[in-house]
Amino acid sequence: MWLVDWDIPSEKRVLFYYHLGKIKKKYGLYGVMSSQSVMLVDDESIAREVYELANRYGQANLYRVEKVA
Image (cartoon, rainbow, N blue to C red; front, side, top):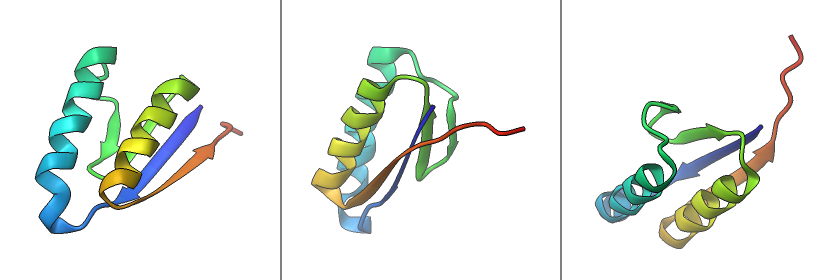
């Protein structure tokens, strides 16, 4: 499991979310975001694509996560 979180400045959010929407559509990811600034996915390549996009528009973090319970 991979988690991407981001902080995008308000003046860049519209463009960021436009491109994020294209990524979500490409991979059929509707409804898998826990909030507007966090995405949890099983696929590392998707997580890295979102991470790179978020870093183009602001700051992002990428984590490999493990469910423990």
